[in-house]
Length: 254
Ligand SMILES: Nc1ncnc2c1ncn2[C@@H]1O[C@H](COP(=O)(O)OP(=O)(O)OP(=O)(O)O)[C@@H](O)[C@H]1O
Picture 1: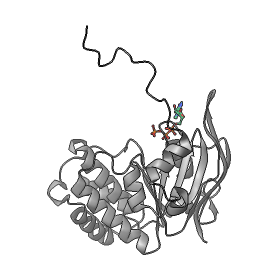
Picture 2 (picture 1 turned 90 degrees about the vertical axis):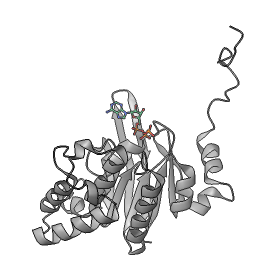
Picture 3 (picture 1 turned 180 degrees about the horizontal axis):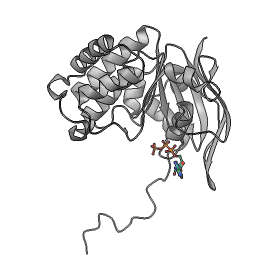
Picture 4 (picture 1 turned 135 degrees about the vertical axis):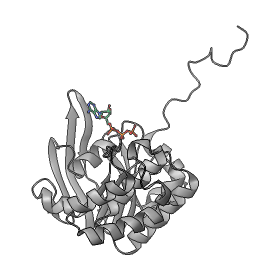
């Protein structure tokens, strides 16, 4: 198995708060991989350390065998990132954003313009290509962010909650684009809370809880005959039963 991503003992604390407590994440090349976990499990922190946005306190990140923090230029040229919060260049139009990204990535103007036009078409953003990104809706921002992340044809694509705020038609488009991309041997890793989506799309899943990987492998092996949602609840604990407290809620006697 060729590994697209491997982390060894990845650690990050914010003051007293240990966000990531020794993560060994593995994703085989060519996977459509899901990273799932409850709120605060450490998914964003882990993805930020893998993609060079946040320096780890300890541990190792390897992308296709290269140390991401020792060889940042080499590794960053081979990855695409759709980060949480989507910090984009707001005062550029969608088309300008893609052309600027192409230039930053060292792609020729002609090739950049061609790729930008194709991506805008696939993402159904042709009509909005001259609108400023600041005026884009949430879903449009996700789509232009994904287009920018794909422009240089990276070997590995990291997406933090790519489907959040995206309408079903656009989600279908994104899915098709990503499926085509992984079918050619590239790797997608995305974080999500939507278990049905992860179960439907992903052939590999890593489950995080309290800063650690609690299960990881081919989706069918992690599910073991259950739905992914059931497996997830078993693995991370279903949390509060909801039977205690809130006795006042729903009472209409007052
Ligand atoms: N910059 C920061 N400063 C302090 N604490 C942080 C910071 N970033 C993350 N944390 C803490 O680290 C823990 C993990 O956060 P993280 O955002 O990685 O979780 P997550 O799994 O992505 O959660 P969610 O699903 O809610 O997005 C949380 O307890 C969070 O409060």
